[in-house]
Image (tube, each protein chain N blue to C red):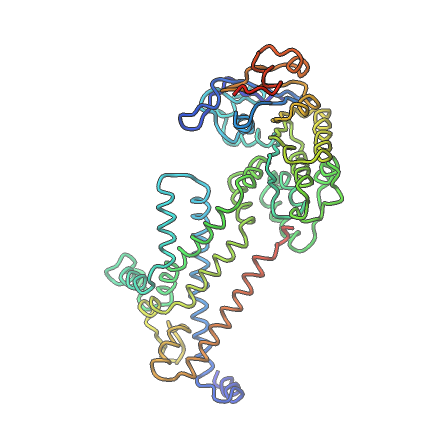
Amino acid sequence: MTVESSLVTPLLLEFPFEWTYLRSIVRVSLYVSLVAVALSTLCSLPIALAVGFTEFRGKTLLTSVINTGMGFPSVVVGLVVLFAVSNQGPLGSFDLVFTAEAMIVSQFVLATPVITGVSLAAVSSVERTVRDAAFAMGGTRVDVALVTIKEARYGIATAVLAGFGRAISEVGSVLIVGGNIVGPDGTSKTRTLTTAIQLEARQGRFETAMMLGAILVVLVLVVNAFVVRLGRGDGGYR
Amino acid sequence: MTLAARDVHHGYGDDPVFDGTSLSVSPGEVVAIIGPSGVGKSTLLRLLALFDRPDGGTVEYDGEDVWNASERRRLAYRRRIGMVFQETSLFDASVRRNAEYGLRVRKSWPDRLRDELRGFLGRTNGTVDAVEALETVGLAEKVDQDAASLSGGEAQRVAFARALAYDPEVLLLDEPTSDLDPRNTAVLEDAVLQAKNSGIGVAIATHDMHQAERVADRVAVLLGTGIIEIGETETVFDDPADDRTRKFIDGELVY
């Protein structure tokens, strides 16, 4: 590692930190956000389909609650999650305080309303006749749900992107539940790009903060491009 | 094969649509359901297509009360029925994917996953049945086009082929030509008669009397909260038993 960093650092001229340190921050950021968004998507899609398809009392209220959740203050979420994973909390036995997994929990809570809300709008906009056609041709409920997801695929891709954007750019809650920790070996334990930027900026190292910011933006762009391609791609559907 | 609604009562909220009405479809016949807009033609077809359970009465397939059968059996019955809707209802996919949908959902999950994987790798080999069904409506050459690129008439013809591709015993058509030009209407009516001649039982809801006269063996007149008259097409049109039928056919306001 030291060989690599001594090789890379001179190339980048005044690269202001260790290569391994930077890599570990990017790794933690991506790990936490991608896992949280994946879990959140698995949870959100069935909810969006169930709410979108069925008529029940309180549907408008539930939709409002989901939409309100999209703008829920992340610091409050962090505080609640910190309480939940603390020794006295309901998840206390998992010993999650100041771990990447605790950050996954808080990002999951933040991303789920976004992904559910945007997916719900996408699923609801699929024409009823299209669902009816799938059913009439002998489709089961699962088939009808799959057809709906395929019809709403652009909207769902947008939902996942919005959720990922919320997760990876999040500072407040990951700072509270993760603690912005770097291990004794100098690599990130719970430090993400955002919390690192916050720290560097507070310590007056603006160049470093700017560089980390640029990396974060590039990461978001790369993931967006990938998901948009996945959503646009037909996967043999055409 | 006989699909029948027997003495069905059905409504939305306190508003009754049917107050005990019956209709059956036998193999190789075309039954036209005529009646004014909003009288429940679509609702009757949806009951026959096993979309909704009637509030009262039974829907029977070969004499079995479908809603008292197991869910698996009901699915098997559903898969012997094809349906075409008034509105365009094609999936946002190729004509081929649309035409093969009914066949696809009938396959086992491992087979479906294998087919999807082959499709993903670009190794699709279309089924013969889907192309044959498209030939019936004269659109076999459009099999690899995007469904979104079709005209309204072509889209409806694909919707018809899609329902035909899996060899149903019954076809339920809900005003399939109401938005179509005369040429596309003629193609679809031909396809209906072909389906009938191959032994399929067809029920077609229409507000076009001439269409009913052209394609139907029997006509059911839906007025008020049920079928007021049903009989041979000629008899119903030339010598209706119910005065309201005569008025409706003559274009007088009866509702």
